[in-house]
Image 1: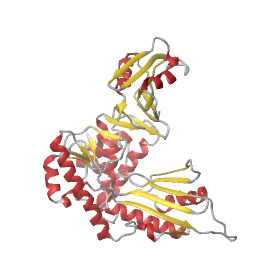
Image 2: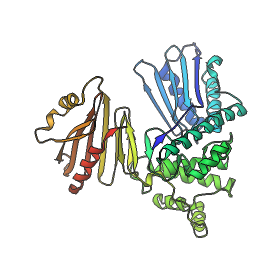
Image 3: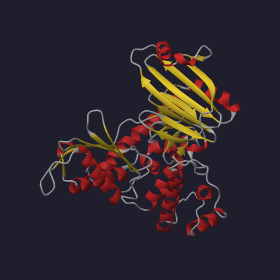
Image 4: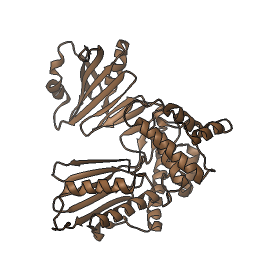
Amino acid sequence: MVSILLSTLEIRLEGQASKRGLIPRMPDGERLLADAAAWLRAEYPDQVRSTRQRTNPSGEAELHVGLHPATPALYLSAGDSGNVRAVAETVAGGPGYHRFVGRVLERLGRELSIAWDEATAGITFAERPDVERAYLGWLGPTLAAVRHARQRSSAGVQVGTPPGTRYTFEGAIATSLGPRDDAWLESAVADPRVAIEITPWWLDATDGRYLLNRALALMWLEVRWRKPAVEGEAQCLEDVHRLLSKSFPLEPGLPYPWHAWAELISFAGFEDGMTRQVHSRTKIEPPETPIGYRRDPVSISHEGWALEIPGEFAERRTEEEWWGGGAGRSVTLAATDTGSMAAQAFLAQVAGDLGAEALTHQAGAVVGRARIHSDESSGVAVGVLDGYSAVNGSGAAIRIVFDDPTDWQWALDLWRSLAPG
């Protein structure tokens, strides 16, 4: 399957912060973005999902702000001279999301005394008709490209889903609000307004439909359909329940996923007035098509390497590593660009200490070496596979830990499946 994104509705904005305080001073980049993060969390507690600040290699401060489960993070950077930059890809969210980010940046500029450069504003602060026109101008050609891809291949196509993960699904197209079939695709190509239903945030308002779609995006993309096991998973279930519970009184006639909602409640153990309503509705409403891409295997990508994992795996990502795990199994993956280095040269450099008994692997251009051993350092013996895979110009390291000794074949197969992608 492939992902298609022909063009973007995006924000690229530059500005200049002013001096402030009784004795006017220019705040350094770290202070400016720390103030921005605090203001965003206070002003938009229902929209801000996460904030992560760091210093990039050039010395500028960076702030990544997660605002919606279906969209990439809003990116802010600031230097000590007061120069500020804002970047956001908004097409995956829709016109309502784009307009929301524009309003947020407009208010942030006033609050932190940042003068945004009108020459860089582009469509950032555009009126609704212009934003809607730009979005539909992306949506129509994108759907036409999907139909063309389907005519050449039976593989499904992902549109507007977060990068880094490929899903297993039936149908023509996977979106952040679920898959659609070829008949739907034909109708949407003929009239792109049919496809408004796959837009997570169409209107400017945060109405019942917005709340339902935000919950559905979480259910399709992020919910692991089991009891919470690691930090953040219980909060995800709580967020879905809160969003649906707020949406229902506003617009009770919307198509709520009663059975998936009840399943989620059973995992989290919620007990309130809304849970009783949900359980009663499951007795009279027909079951909906199962919701959630994470019910099936997914393929994750990290630094140019792809790996298929169980969809229920918990995940953590940093710039250095990807980690996934669950049910007595865990996987850590790291990768690096090796320039002009040949694959065998990379293995000779990093895998030399695996010993003469190391396992070898070759599949096309991919070569690898690995070793399976037992680790008792925690007081409990677990199986470990330490492996490396490489192609010319790129190398990856993987560690697979498993509690059940009979899982060694699963670990071997997983390492051998690691490939560029």
